Length: 81
Image 1: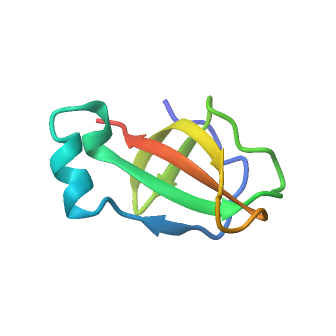
Image 2: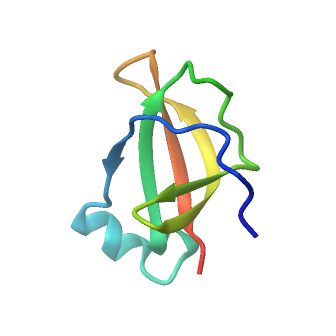
């Protein structure tokens, strides 16, 4: 069940590279995606949230600082089947 959206934001999508796809085949990471968003949002992103992108629902698995820009965070999410 999807609740009402808490907020929307700009995100850069980082798809898995071929090497990563081969490494993660058969694991929960196989259907994962990384969303790169600004650290400061209307609400703080947490692991109990979901992301709706291109009519696909993703469950947030982890949130980590971006190593290249302290104003960004990496949101690792898995596609909900």
